[in-house]
Length: 341
Image (tube, rainbow, N blue to C red; front, side, top):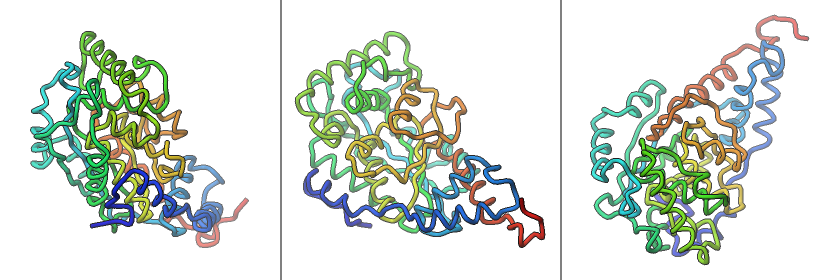
């Protein structure tokens, strides 16, 4: 499918179109809040679940939102920075895991089945890794926009919520580079073990990010330029999917550090392009907590997970379903014949 945002010929053209992003429906959220005040419970007794229900109401534009279709998208890409020895696993694992996803054998398959999400996997030119960002830009402007368009096209406009995840050997280094370029700090502040890096690999990750930041220092004049300098096709696709979801008023559940670092590019555009996103969880990757704090997002879960694949978002979907089940299914005091306060 196409969206009003894509295709775009340039970052400037895409940026100009973002003014058309739908806003939060305050009237629907207020109606949801009024309903919460009439349900058979003390005010605020369901805590964050009440907030989630009102968040969903505002973005879906209805006072009693329901999840009929939950879509989970996992984007996969390969990265040129792996030439710097930043990955403990070979790049062939990306394609092998994509095959595992499609065969139903990965963790995300089981978690989507358990939470009632429809999973689709999109592999993005795995045979052609992005450029090594220590030597030059990871992608051209045209390549970023093409990957964003592919991400947007993968979104089901009939979905009631979108879960996002990724797969790509080397992409924890990419995520740390994006975070450092967007929010500053030392490379070491953002680097974590990823898929199990030892001290030597961690050192190479830090060195690669430092080299990339130095090489691209004069070119990072916008968040989309940061994405081109450091990002992968799967990060760009995540951004495109988030924007397409917004055009269809579909709330988004973000996964871990890598997914959130990709989404942070949109936050940097300054148009509230990530306002419809919920943080599904905070991962064990050290930079994720710091990144969520920068974005002002409180995670729904903290389970020590660090798998990626959209796994944390899939588990968090159960929390969102619980919030909406209580919001929609509970009786009001009047309906139940129970005396209010």
